[in-house]
Amino acid sequence: MFSPVPKEAGQADPNSAYYGMPIGNGPFKMREPWNHNVGIVLVRNDLYYGPKAHLDEVDFTIVGSDKPTEAEYASFQDGKADWARIPPPALPEASATYKPRKEFIAESRFGVNYLLVNVANPPLNNVKARQAISLAIDRDAIIGAAFKGFQTKATSLVPPPLSAFYQPGVCTSCAKADPVQARRLAQEGGVPPGTPVRFSFNTGGGHEEWVQLVAQQLQDTLGLNVDLQGMAYRDLVAKEEAPDATGLYRASWGSDYPSADGFLRPLLSASSFPPGDNRGRYDDPSFDSLLDRAQKANSESEKVALTKRAEDVAIGKDLALIPMWYRTQYRVFSNKFKNVALDSFENPTLADISLS
Image 1 (cartoon, rainbow, N blue to C red):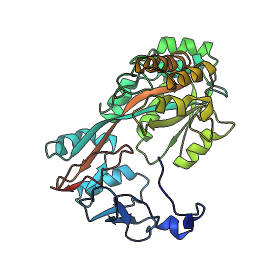
Image 2: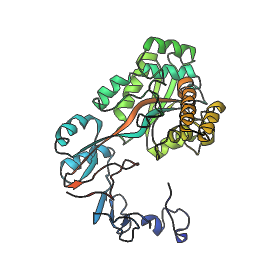
Image 3: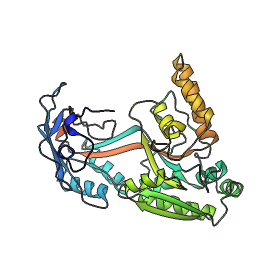
């Protein structure tokens, strides 16, 4: 997805005037330069080529908190914000309170949450080790405890909204925890009790509770020495991209387009090695060949069949990534607005929103 940039903007420079107040061609424009750590104000762009936005102004408040989701939701509850994400523990209360008032959004997205695994470096460069990890994780228990039941267990990488390509159960080690088989595979895969495994995640995104539960399950079931490391998102990406990357990483993916190829190719193709998004460095020529053949298929049925075979290889056979749950997004918003929905980036559809 691209946007035009004037030549005068020059190269990307955080200290430039353009960086502080970029010029675009969308339905809104910035009223003034970005007020760092405070907020951004947008006003309607009357030169926009399409239908004019209904709102005169949109104010974004930058939440200065190490728990931004909690801060957003609290601000909404206090009447200071019109839109907010919801911390997982508050989902039952938010649904009960705001759904009857038509102030609650629940949308299944073209996305999936998963564990990124470095498959090139020890200790998880053996498929049996990865299968052991997956079988040791009780997804149902985690969804119940951390998300109060407000997520759906993933047994594939391609999510349900892509119905023609969706293969529930292609990840045979995702459907149900099996501690006995997990321990057997761990031994065969070279990760016996005491093996150190690094598990990295980004802080501030509401992940703390569930990653701790996963780490505890891996320790309790497999006896692994899990080193749970929280860090800023940019540091997480840097760790994933490093040549000596190892272990597990909290990850999620949402496709810009309703395409199964938009999941499989960027996350698992050899052509997507860092700086691309295949940070686990999965490399299987048969997988890449199936994707390329699917892209050139003469019929939709052939494309679907070849794409499914590719997922069978990468997820069913090699478990190159470990699916956790599909991406369902929840938001609250003020009912003084109508036509409120999520766009492909899970942000509010500002161009369509109007006052009720």
